[in-house]
Length: 243
Length: 243
Ligand SMILES: Nc1ncnc2c1ncn2[C@@H]1O[C@H](COP(=O)(O)OP(=O)(O)O)[C@@H](O)[C@H]1O
Ligand SMILES: Nc1ncnc2c1ncn2[C@@H]1O[C@H](COP(=O)(O)OP(=O)(O)O)[C@@H](O)[C@H]1O
Ligand SMILES: [Mg+2]
Ligand SMILES: [Mg+2]
Image (cartoon, rainbow over all chains, first blue to last red):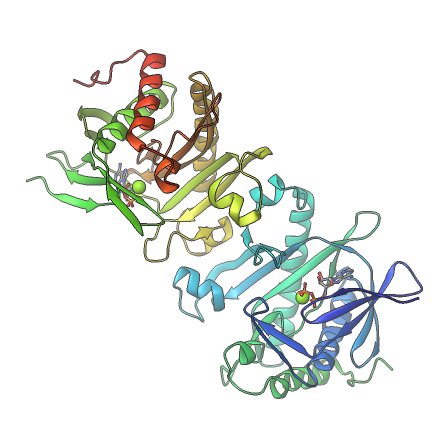
């Protein structure tokens, strides 16, 4: 029997008849401030699922190893089950959000090289910022795994910065999660959606991501729909291509 | 004319007739919680000056390049003027303090390798934790400087862990600061005292450092005096050796 093994802030993870495969259900829940701000937004689960589908298919096609298998409904996909490495691997191409506050750097400032940060995934500890020395000291990941995850993150940055630029969006920053298959191979997991990245419209400079919700800047679904439409036009797939 | 160029939380920095030399005055001010807790403790300036003198003389003798020139009174020393690199370079041999809180690790836990952390020295920003990628992105220090500072920190760790062990004290963690001479050479600067490190008595497990003040565990000067006495006995110098 299928059972739900995890109910997170944005998705549910269900077992399937194949023990190496999970079914992900994208929910309509929106949270900010590490869960302190919470609401239901009709259509959000569907939009994130369809956006993440397009991005993961694109990454798979470009040779990035991901957990993505296939999308099976508007808000469900099948993925390879991994043991998640409890780190949020953040890349910042442009200063924004927490980074700007923490270092008093204007939003929009650029860097010589993208800035890379990791956070320890722990709701209880409030996802603390963590450095490599701490990651090794606490045995959260090995040096090889960290090196590999940043290599993949950098490839993802090149691919997606170019992809979003081609549809008039600046990829400001984003968060990736990785996991280990049974044999220890590390692959890209979780999702890639406007919930976990910042996208700024090149022309209008408008926020096209979850900051719309965090900062009460307008209607989230309108903005996510626009991102999906542009991606579909670019990648030549209808939203229902998964059928 | 001598003038005070900086009044910090624990020391004043004065110019001298030699533009490459500063006079450091250790004050009796004690602060915790980044300045939120503050008080005067008679004798603290003298004790820190004399302890830091012994440590820096020892490090100089062991081939570590430091700013220390000589001690000229109970609470004053002469040092080579540097441009401080605004980073606190922290090494943790044993879990304690902020680290224990942040990662929910019991005080006293040990690591496979010492943990290394840097903090961006900025009172206004509350000395935020910073990683190498951010240090390079914000041009706070170069890759070579960071590599060199950790090399020196590791040498200091070996030397001082052994030194303190020989007088019945565990070197739990400590903070170093470095600076650039006019020609760019990086040297160890600032101080090394129980204000900036944690020392636990091996037998009694008692705190022999500023945690006595931070946690209201007793009289700070009694404890600092004990550290000074043990160091003097070991290093064979009277407290007034500087005269
Ligand atoms: N392929 C996978 N296998 C197992 N777990 C995964 C996989 N992909 C993502 N996860 C985990 O499933 C959960 C997804 O739910 P989500 O709502 O995003 O959770 P969270 O509140 O932790 O962000 C996350 O904990 C994520 O790390
Ligand atoms: N050799 C040196 N040359 C110039 N500045 C120094 C030197 N050694 C230490 N400093 C700086 O002088 C100040 C010492 O005062 P302190 O009370 O410790 O300040 P803080 O409140 O910043 O900790 C610090 O800002 C320290 O970085
Ligand atoms: Mg998540
Ligand atoms: Mg200081």
